[in-house]
Length: 485
Image (cartoon, rainbow, N blue to C red):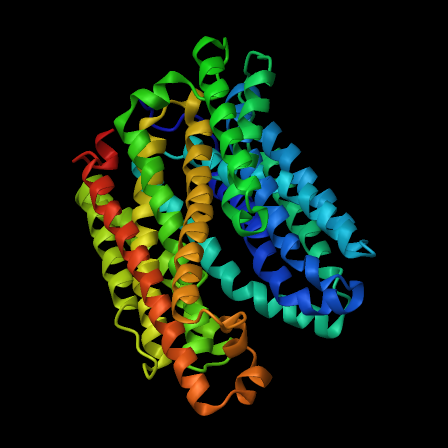
């Protein structure tokens, strides 16, 4: 089903560098903004709305990812990446001029609409210019961008807000994005494609289904009984989308995707990775600060170990795939993911914080190895004409998995806290806040920490169960190497 490298181009290194710049720009956006948020809130106010600054960005990004993937197949990679990057940069400039929290949230939504193109299309372009054998190692370079962004983002954000205006954390994207677009315009030829009309009805049903699903998952507690209405909307929109896709002249998801066991396995694997990742990303810092009594810096440093393990394992997986097979590499990564999730259960209130960091590193290696294997196998299996939507579906699956993991583990934590501390008002916040924690009596604090620790252990149990499914998906990978495609 595949070719060597569909686009025979010179200066591939410059194209790869341009794609890495684009991905770095989008990856650093989350971490750099998180560091600057206290300063932004102090200037703009609206503390009760600050969560939407992150949620709306991820929301619009997730909704637009599959649409960009399909449009890239229909209208060309470079054109759609330029459109997405332009929207992202315009949104970044506007964010820097926001004068209240509402406008900042609206501009972040605009920024997210552009970000939906950057990740999947950068990865797709790299897959187009490198052969199946080369993709196994080259994709690891793209993965390393996340590790660098996780470290550079907080440091850059803290330095900029300390010495300059917080607006610069958004405007710093401008030169990076413009250089990336200039390099791609100079060195990446655009494939001539026959113009196709956009599947408008399918796009509307898809966006409605995704929007309702994300809202139901991420705002379940706030919605209350309205949650039922959103779930019904998900089912209705999904059914309408399926019915429309079966008869559409240009379906958003070509039938080849649903007929391929490998592509289905790749999407299922990334769904699992996204869900399992939330067990550490969302709840390990809570354990370190609330149970171990660590500082935010210690929690962030421990969590950063996952971002270091991810690109290292991704690089190793590229070489391992060439020597063994997709299946062996995916199974090894799944075992590391399961082992790391199991290590979470061994954490105790008196555990050294370095143990939490080591656990995060093991989980990061498992995620890096499995995610790269799933992505490369799907890109090597997919023909050029559907590679954009296949790559986008992989990344979209991970986003949906993260939303599912957040909702599921959050529900498990809240249920346990309700049973163990029925009369406590927001117990996690009480032990996370230093002044409130110091005001508690030693006996009350001890009981509260024990109850929250037991509740978090059940969250880690769920993360382990989710990780176990990765073993089954890894077994679905073919016993062949990338150079055998």
